[in-house]
Image 1 (tube, rainbow, N blue to C red):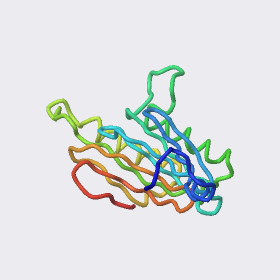
Image 2 (image 1 turned 180 degrees about the horizontal axis):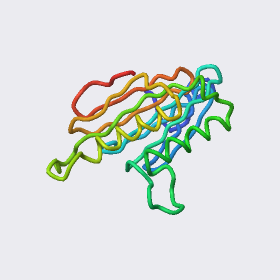
Image 3 (image 1 turned 120 degrees about the vertical axis):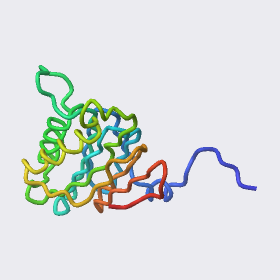
Length: 173
């Protein structure tokens, strides 16, 4: 009979990549074989940026489109300043903007407020795309829109961006 006591052998511990959780309105940068994860993406957007040459990857979980008229505060909360903060952090770890590639997920319309104009989810997605374009970072894949939540992981060693949706199988972008 096998007994599970929560401990792992040294070889099992070495084979598991470090898992780094990124909360709402947060960003993190990783190198080597770490895996960046976030969940709870409804209207929020998860932006993963990877530079293959340097092996540096980063993930930001943004809530709102722009930080206009906001003094100070949390840059990661907004699509425009969150992407900028992530790019700066990636560059500080040795990534080159020329080598950066992005993938995004989220931006759902969880609640229908269509009579009040575009949803927060679609405005978030539009702002992320606009900010990535301003930084000349190509957007290689996206899983946005719909009316369902998502969680995702970004594998720092490969740049694989795996999206798990509430109503579909996992998708790798």
